[in-house]
Length: 158
Ligand code: 4NP
Image (cartoon, rainbow, N blue to C red; front, side, top):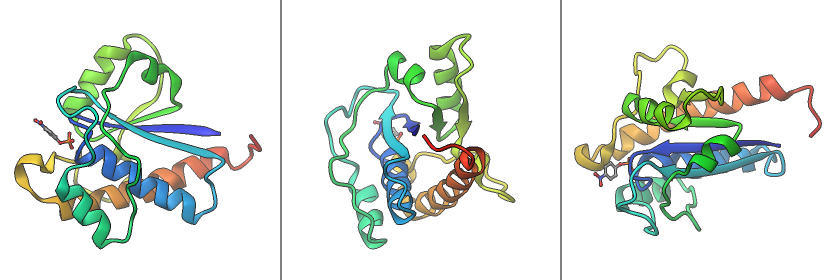
């Protein structure tokens, strides 16, 4: 079993979208018992809320479900419990590095898994409203992330 947590600022736009897209991909590959997926936000403003309507709309348009996803705030415990922490932008990265301290838990930007892309982060659509562009990047990133996980774990049975 490998566990992944997606983290953004509010946990209502990008990270719940990534959670839903990655869950869908994991389900399509029949890997639900091998890959655990979650998401959380750095801020507490939206705790308990469902994803932003822009995220819901784009997920619905792509036939991806987002049941049972509600915003929560990331905790220090999360950061030591998950095998991989995937953040959306450079500000998230520095905040999470600051929370983790000296631990060597792997933290990546989702864009690290998009080969050949000139994008170095996924900016929040909360202000831009560009949920389709964010979906496009998240989908590419999730495919690359799953390939990475499979390539690292293809000799493991647990
Ligand atoms: P997210 O987007 O980090 O992708 O969920 C945002 C959501 C809310 C806010 C900022 C970004 N906010 O300022 O409330």
